[in-house]
Structures are given as structure tokens and as C-alpha cells.
Image (cartoon, rainbow, N blue to C red):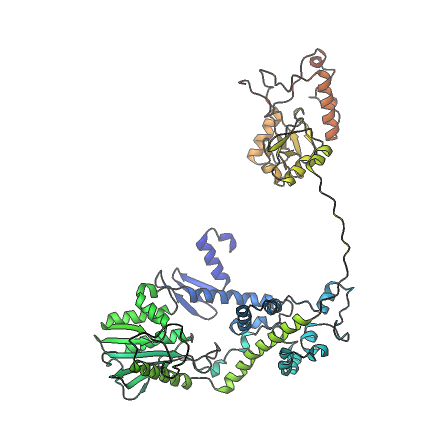
Length: 614
């Protein structure tokens, strides 16, 4: 599948298929695991639920891999991070750095008990450093060591009740008892005992009119999470709407929040929708809520509400207002002003709030609690889940206390080796084969004319350590080993020859280098199949060779004599470890007529030789 990925959209589609999703349309993605469809109806719709679902799909795949890691058994069942991380957030908020670091180390599986260290270093004993009796495994360190169990510490004493259960279940579920991570299956309500409803079922308080016949007036709405609001999988929210007439409570309606998403902000928004369902067409109402998020979102308008959480409820609210031609004004007031008058308030109480408003909010909260209590899970179902959620926090408290109190592990002193002192540039120049002429920001070899920037010491070191290849080599001379051009070396897989054109080329792939190394710094691509069409053209030109340039002789060549010429050719032969160029059919020797007659020999054309126009 990856071979068909060529852009952003194909990449997104490939990722969705890997996560077992079906992108049937651009705006409709289906999760094949849950058969849940995500339909993005508007460009401003919130993608937060979709992103969360994609992350969960990815995590499900990775959990099976994580279960194979250290103390990871139990990961394959998923992880309830909402129940696992509350202690981490609390420690971070209190800025308890040592305890926070210990818990994060535990969760990441980065603890190294003595037995784990012994597996890596067999010469180190695996015996517990405290009791000196048993192997120092994670299970022994956290739950079985008598030295730790006898510590006079609140976190150790208060978690002693978990020792029998931990010793019995640590081998089957180490991710919980040895790493403090709660598996997902331990916090889920069984399907046969789950009481989630998917359609609203309204209950009325006092004698209220039926749906669609409520009159104009002042209404109050509220939402609550019930007795188990602190536990995400156990939370069952209730929704309530009350009506006040002349300061008197005349009745209301309440309902359990339907759907899988059970959050208090969603219940607060559902109160506004439930009121609109019961209102008669063309009514004018004043709706007062104690949820500031709902009030601000509604007053921001329908376009804004398309990009926030619970946008589906806000869409239904604005559609129903247009359909019934209802005028609804929404205001905010603090909660529990009647039953908790001394509660510390973050924001001041609005000046328009009077006693009737306090009573209206109180009754809305009261009937919402009635629905939440009606649909709350039985304690036989909720108690085991609550015990595991509390248990994981105690496990983490015990673990970070033990980690912080353990003595430092005894380590043998390592013999530090004295590193060789890095050579200076002057020492590198003295040991180099190049004859260096230094400039402001570069250096140049006077023999091979190679240059190198002095900006980085590593580049200078590589350049000065490379062999010096003079440019006076004859046509077709093989170069043994990599060469450096302007501080960059060629790859050792190339078979290099020198061309009279003034460049080096590979006799296999035909790649060349003159002013800088490009293709030759990569491995030879075609050692068996032959050169490319470009490489064939390079090899043809190198075989023919151009005529020697005519015109003025470069000033660096005017100092050459027949004796210097022969010496340079011999130097080339010694450096390349090849036969003396006299044995080469095209080589120039001191016995040639041109040399004996005193005619000046000039080296092959190179980028450093002047053109006829100079």
C-alpha cells in the first residue's frame, strides 16, 4: 500500500486503512471495529471526537506490541488512562518533582530492579540489596521484601492491605501491580449490565404540559454527573429543567442523558435542547443556566458552535429555534446559591439575581439529581470498578515511596581512559601530504590545487588526512583509493581514473567530479549492470581526450623543467602504487624527443589552467 502513497490525501487514506477504518467519502469515515461513522457536515465542525477515536484505534494496535515489553503483560487489553494518570496530575500541580519523576519512571517501565540489571550484566548478583535473601525482582521489591514492608511510612503502611492480592496477581497482570497502569477491561461495565439509553425518556415533576405546549416564561436548566461523577465509565448524567412563575416553582422535566458520551457539559447543553423540545412555537423564553461554557457558546452564535465539543447538540438547538420561530435569551448565574451560600465564588454574583432565581436553579439541580440517581449503576457493579481505580493510585503511591527510599546501587568505579588529545590545525598541516597555502577562510594545496574551507575542524581534518593527487597526471591514469576535492571524499566503491578534461571519473558507473564531489561521494550504483547513458558519454569522452590547450602557458607551469617533469611523473607513480609511467604507452618520459630537445611539457588541462582568452 505504501508504494501507492504520493501525496497528502493518499497518505491519509493509507493511514486510515492501517487503522482498520473505511474512508467511504471525504466527509464520512467509518470505524470498522465499532461500526461508528463520523460525518463531518460542515468545514467548521469540531474534529476533536474524530481525532480521539483515531488515537484510540492506533493505541489498540500498539498495545499488543507494548505487552511484549518489560512487565507489559495486560497491555493487550487496553489501558484506562483516565484512571491511571490522576496522581501524576496531582503531583505535577503540587510540584513534587521527586515523587513525580518516580511515578513517570514506573509508568514508562524504566525501573531497574537488581534482577533486571543482572540479566544485562551477569557478573552482578541478582540478590535483593536490602534483604540479601531473595532475587531482587520487581515483585519482590514492591511487595515481598520484609525490609520495605517494615518501613515506618504512611504510604507503605496504608497500602499493606494490597500485598496478598498483589502477590497473587502480579504474574498474570504485571502492568497493574508492578507498573501502576490500569488495564481497560477492569474499569468497563459489562454489556449485559450496562444501562446506557439511546433515546430520551422524559419524567415530569408536578403537573407540566406535554411536549410542544409549554408557554413563554423563565426557565432554569442544570446537569449533574450523579454519585459516580468522578469515574468516567460509571458516570450517568441527569438533566433537569424547572419553571418559575412569580417567584414560585410550578414544575419541571428531567431526563437521563442519552448516548455513550456522559459528561456534565453535554448534560448542561442538553437542558437547553430539552426545553426547546417542550416549548410551543413562536414563544419567547428566558433560559438561565449555571454553566458558563454553554451560555458563552450559545451567545457566540451557530457558526462558532460548529467548531466546539457537543456541536451536534448546538446544531439541533439552532435548527429547532429556526423551525419553531422561538426567541430564547440565555443568561448565566452561579450554582448552589441557595443551598451553599457561603461557597467561595470565582466570579461575582450578577446584580439581577434575586431569591426566585436561586430557587429556580435549586429545583433544576434537584430534579437533575433525581434522574441521575434513577439511572446510577448498582453498587454490586460499580464497587469492583471503584476499588480498582482507587487501587491503582495506592500502587503508585507505594511505588514512588519505595523508589525514593531505595539506597543508591553500588557500582564499581570505571577505569577512565585518557583520550588522545585532538591535533591542532598546525599539527595536522605538518603531518599532511599536502603542501598547504593558507588564506582567510580556506586553505589550498599547492600541488593538487585542492581547496578546503576552514569553517569546521572536522572538514579540515578530513582534507589534510586525504592523499595528495597532483593535477599533472597523464590521460587515463588510475587513481587508487578515495580522493578529496574541496574537503569532500569520494566513495571507496568507485574505480577512479583521471581524464585529460581535468576531472576524475569512475570507470564503472561513469560518474565524474571536477570542482566538487556530488555523485562520486555515493556508492557506485551500477557495478554490474553498466553505466547509465550519461555515464557512457562520460567514458567515451574520457577515452578520446581533448587536445592540449593552446595559448599562453600558466605561470605555475613556466617553472617546470624536463627534470621536474620526470620527477613529478615518478612521484605520481609512487603515490598510486602503479608501474612507472615510462611503461605506460601514453606516458611522457625523459627519453622522449620533446623532453630531450628542451621542449616544455605542460600538464593536462585542469580548471586551474587559464584559457586562451586570458
